[in-house]
Amino acid sequence: MNDLLPGRVPLIFDNLPGSIEHIKAGSLRALGVTAAKRSAALLDVPTIGETVPGYEVNVWNGIVVPKGTPSEIINTLNGAVNAVLADPRLKARFAELGGEPMPMTPAEFGKLVVSESEKWAKVIRAAHIKLE
Image (cartoon, rainbow, N blue to C red):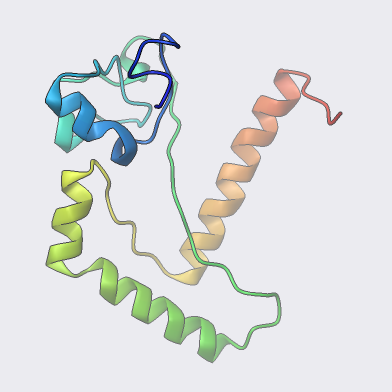
């Protein structure tokens, strides 16, 4: 962002929370969003998938604990996180920044991690990416 705004680089892929204020202020032009659907915060910005069918990249965050953590602790932590994500003020702030809370169970989060890992493993194999 520090190089994009003064014009030292021509474009970047960025998460909406880091760029949305610049887009709304008109100092940046969004070419597309990488999610499967348009962002409610920027409905006039198309998805990349509208031009490149099948293109979808999502940004997500999660909280993990060490293997072997007792299920009672996991469930307590999960309940607390989901309660915070349900707070209307937090949901409104996420929406302002172009984000969307994704409350889920530990099992659902585990499936997301597996799914995303499999998706990106295919990309790595198809691109013949190797560790240096």
